[in-house]
Every structure is written in C-alpha cells, then in structure tokens.
Length: 348
Image 1 (cartoon, rainbow, N blue to C red):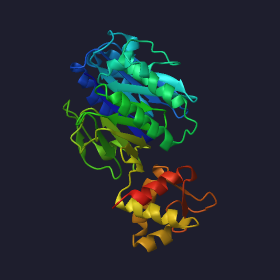
Image 2 (cartoon, rainbow, N blue to C red):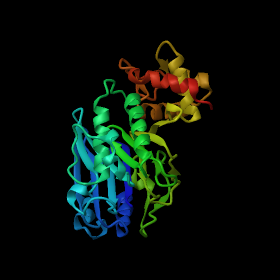
Image 3 (cartoon, helix red, strand yellow):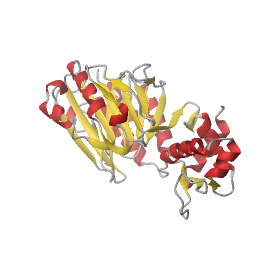
Image 4 (cartoon, helix red, strand yellow):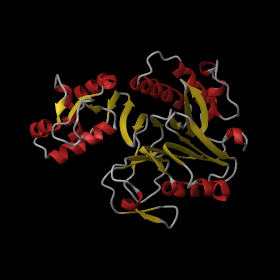
C-alpha cells in the first residue's frame, strides 16, 4: 500500500534525521513521494513527485531544506489512480483561511460511488479515493459553526469512523496548528514522543546511521513523530484502532474514541492541572509545589509541559520569570470545558 510520516514540534525544526530513514521506504513504495510543511502563518509548502523517493535527486536534497513545526510526508504504492503528480500525496486545500494537508494509507474506493458521500463543493483533481475522502472531510468540517478544537476533533473522529467502514483508513491531517491522526487497522501506525531531557544515541532502522540526541535537540524542544512503522530503535507506541489522536507543539494533547474526547495527562500533569483549575484565582508556582509536596524544580517541569500543551498560561502582569516561586498560572479560557471533562472522568 503506502507509508505515512508526520512530525509535530514546539519549535521550527529540520527533519533530516527521521525523514532520512523514511525516504528509504520508497524502495518498496515506488509510485511517488511527497512532503508538506508549514510556516507560522498557516501556509503550507508542498513538494512531491510521481517517482520513487530513493531515486529522486530532489528528495535527497530536500531532506536538508524542510524546516517547520508540522510536517506530513507520504510514499505511495498506487492502488487507485494512475502514477501522476495529481495523484501523489499529500494533498493541500484551503479552509477557514488556512491550508489543510492530508495523506492517507489504505483503500476506501467504494465511497466514491456511494450517494451518502456525494460531494457538493470540493472537487478532486485526480482519481484517487484518498483525495475524494479528503474533499468529503473538508466539506463536512466547513459546516461547523463552533470551530473549537473539541468540536473539530469530534467531527473528524465521526467522519473517519464512517469512512473507515469501507476499508483501511489511516490518515494524517493538519491545519498548521494541530496534527490529527487516525488509524483503523492494528499495528499500522505508531508514534514517538521525543521530550527533554534529550540523551543517548538513536539509530535508524532502514540505514546504518545514528545520532546523539543531545547534539541534535535543544533543551526545551518537544517533538512527536508518527510513522506507519517505527523508523528508529527508540520506544515507539502503536496507536489504538478507531481512535483519533491530536498532537500539538510536539506532544500528544487529546484523543477521541467511543468514550468521547479527553486530554492526555500523566499523573503529575493531572494533579497540577486539577490544583490550578480548582483555584478561584491564579496559583503561584511556589504554593503549588508546597501543596503537592513537590520540589520547585519538579513542579516547574510539569508547568512547562502544561504550558507547551496550551492548557495553562502565566499571568500577564507577572514581572518574574516563569520558574520563579511567585509566578502565577491559570487555565486557558478557551479549553476549560475540555479540561473540566477530563478532570471529572479520568481515573488515575
């Protein structure tokens, strides 16, 4: 079939190491390759070719030139549609003044002839079921009045589940802010979180090549990498079938499944977030550490992760550094309903 690759990071980063390994997957998936990446203004840049990535001079050169906070890539083994530029993934379309990028692994051809999935506004350029599914998803998203994250993620999950009845439907989708991933076949999509502290040697599985993480990554750099199959000898995790994953700033922020939407929090993140949310006022870092019995440095590490996920903010009138005991924190207003839902349903 095909293989997928994606990156989410809290900083603009290069993909030379991880994508170097992914490019070799084109030895088997020889019908095309493509990579899309975002600038901070929501505009995507796209390069793709209907030829094997391992034989492409452009693919060899571009591995050093792609830098972004979100990257989506695909190597193709054609199952529907000819070997041509228009049928090569990823695809890019405009919605809500942002570029949306989409790549798909699998076959769901029967939706094209199903009247329930008839397109009204968005028209495919090529012949693939992947582009058709992308158009259908964008049409259904365009009707949303509430464009908050939870509403978008819930709609996407329902759409992916529906389309997934027709076959394998593993997808990568992004609007330049969030990276959405869905899989409906076990062991066919994996993810890896590279978070501080960055230590040790990492080796590629498809090439005799290794790097030392502390030389590759900056101290506060968070990254999430998604691939059909693991690319390195690190601890990759398989995604759960029928679940939508939402990555933000290099971390796993949210999942949606039959049980609804919920934030992904480890026990310390849960306790810190609950303490802040339970307070009628912003909470000082020093008071938070004392209440939870944590060292100040330990409490700040959790604060840093929650800030990176966009769940909390430092008080705008603070005149102290973020790690100062008097620094004050409160939950992000626009996501409080999702925070409350998670805090009342998650069992530690």
